[in-house]
Amino acid sequence: MMRGSMAGWGNGLLGVIIFSASLPATRVAVGGFSPLFLTSARAVIATALGIALLIALKQSRPSRADFLPLVIVAIGVVVGFPLLTALALQHITSAHSIVFIGLLPFSTAIFGVLRGGERPKPLFWLFSSVGSLTVAAFALTQSAETSLQGDLLMVAAIVVCGLGYAEGAVLSRRLGGWQVISWALVLSLPFMIVLAVATLPSTWTGISMPAWAALGYVSVFSMLIGFVFWYRGLAIGGIASVGQLQLLQPFFGLMLAGFLLRESIEISMIGVTLFVVLCIAGSKRFA
Image (cartoon, rainbow, N blue to C red; front, side):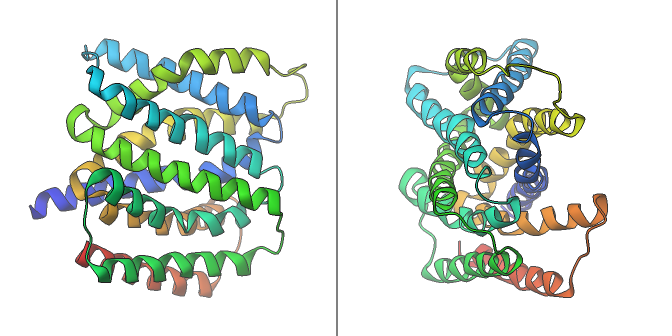
């Protein structure tokens, strides 16, 4: 039991680290591509890799009962979250979007109850709420730029993403983590191809290398590899419990900015991170 729990948290942590660069990368990518093309292109690229894995490892098709849950996963994490965040990041900064990422663990936990049948103890909700509010409050102090349209888009993104995470975690118990995201990508492929063709850039000149690199990252890592670890972690460690690791995602993003972009890391960030870790430990204890 303990070994399974640790494996779940280890996989979940790797997924969070990979996802931590997603919003900054999306912010860079929308500087060169439209949100609709970025959403569809990243899905098409990830689907090509997913199909190659499914064929190479000779995976059987999901059952008919798995079709609707896979559609929900596709709507939540393949189409909904990438598109809504890309649209939102045209109006707000990636720093401001962290306010809403702090609410994602709470959203995931709620859908873990509704879709996964989990029943965390009352103290879990206390620790989860305090952790989420702490991250949101910290993010608000780091960004003064707001936009009602951008904020509403991020709220919608958090709701559909929490649903997609929980639904995918339940499916992963039967199909496996990478299989779930791969099949969800396959289901969305026809729509994404049409969307990609319809929103092709009028010209490819002038698109910067950082924008291309950001497209590559969100396609390969954010859209596929991250889910391999994330869904496995949620499936074996518990949706509500492991989902709280997302509270660390903003801080990993800020640390990456510090090491890669030489941005300053404030003492307050370290202090808040330590407090959030305590909240995560409390959530784990009572999940």
